[in-house]
Length: 198
Image (cartoon, rainbow, N blue to C red; front, side, top):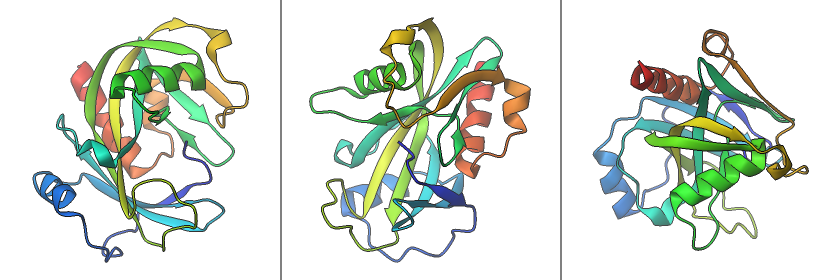
């Protein structure tokens, strides 16, 4: 979930943490398309987020979440939660799941849609700008989310988890979504997905 996050596009030159060698080698083969900052957890966690377009996967030990833009005809699924509006549902991997299994489960639980025609658009690289929180269970100081595009295939309303963080999900016309105030990385992935669709 994007729980408790706010973003800012003024992020360059902030991070000073050193990347792990395997992640550094992977990122060196790619060029970020946008950068932004996010604030999570009541303002206690600040992150630098870089987005990349690629079909190559980062080392899996850094991948904590899988997300997807979801299309239905000429519309895009838009989600609203207490902190933000966004266009890529998804969530955390559970033990033993493949990335595709995580994506299908998370989208079904968040919005009640089954998806098909899944293809990878790229990934998000998150870098912590604040000290490691006490009890933090995820990779630190860096982690990644994989971002896909998919087609909505079947609505299963009773599959949605009612206490989920997302408050609302609705398909909106592509032209309307293009004009929405979205984070820089969301705009990068939306543009890339539309180019694939055309």
